[in-house]
Length: 563
Image 1 (cartoon, helix red, strand yellow):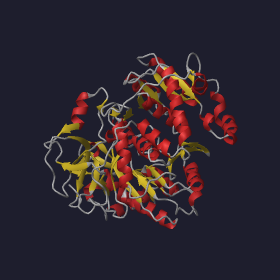
Image 2: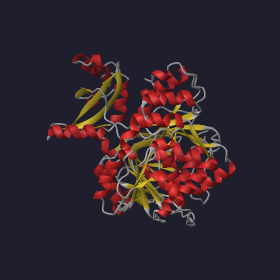
Image 3: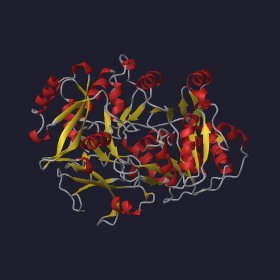
Image 4: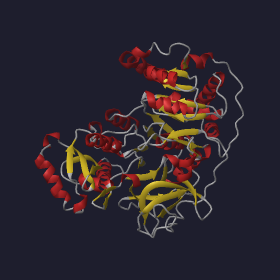
């Protein structure tokens, strides 16, 4: 459904250059050699330096035996070496198999085995775990070990070694590689000539894995370059060389890699790299670096509301705040927008929607046209539709159905899972391939999209459908509630009963009386069948590695209790 109001605002058909991701970086480096590509705790790297570092890293990888089509597992946080190595792999036509460094040993074995990866790159602090996983993998795996302090400014390097780095100086061991030393010693070799190929797998990211094992999502250069161009066109703010993004979302995640890193770099802007999130450091970075853009998941922005370091800070330098990766509840958006206004920012937080299967965001709320609970309008060259679940039959405006979409960012498929690929990527009657998201939503008459819930997360109690997201939003409106998560628990009489896990602003208020007060307030806001049958207070909620509320962990806990 095309929105006539916005067709003149954003061009609907962009020209996507037939270039690799590396070639896009090389092009921008030639145009803006002296601009800063990334800033790591005050140590800045220009685009000219960045381009040289990519090629030097590429030579080192070729010297290690990496060839076009080989998968190299990148198990790194957001540090300069991670950015260099990611583009170096693309430079030589290899595949960047991106995983979280905090993954467990068994998970790492799985991630190595899926693409038959024979190299894994890790910080020294995770060396023992990674080496143990490499020993158990199907292939002979070389571990490449690097040190974060190698990229820190001089005044921070010694302090880091004394505080955190000293125990890991003994790594790597055996025949494994120390990256900094190898970079210096590796010979200058001829790099392979790599042409742009529209259907070449350049990157493997992994789906959330909330049910079963995560699936490897195969993505191309076109997928990432298209995203970068669409995002620039759609944000309605001039993304230009010299502007800055606080790049905290991790590179193993589509939102972190696609928006926080690649979109910023191919337009000559600067990534302020953060290897991990904690609210004090994040607030300090915002105060000191004054980033023009920040992008993250709801839990990051919720944490900002509680940051002592931002109490009296003028945020007028901010040009864009983008939220994705999880549903942004209406009440939380109101709190964030009030916070921004109180701190002199002229922007609102804008919610996006997407999946790893299309890199990340493919839909975003317009700058000055927020509609409550809407995730906005599709990106240029991306089309959304709502179909009745289990069919290709279109839904009428306002009618709930499954969200499906098509466009240039759609994945090539799931690694080693042809049957699941066929379920997710289907040809519709228009002859095009569409992604079936497994998410419920609707579209209004103006083409604005509304996300309701994952189909598999829907709670059925006494025959009624209960959607956790709007219920959680109502709970957040109750006095004293800071965070919450709603799940369905097996019930012999109802099928499922609704249970709410709640974090209070003041833990001292935990009591049966407080539970009754919350339930009384909910009776004024939600249908009687949706009111939780049980409330459990928690000091905190479990989070996934990217900061989403890990509702499936709560479900697993309840299933264990039932068993």
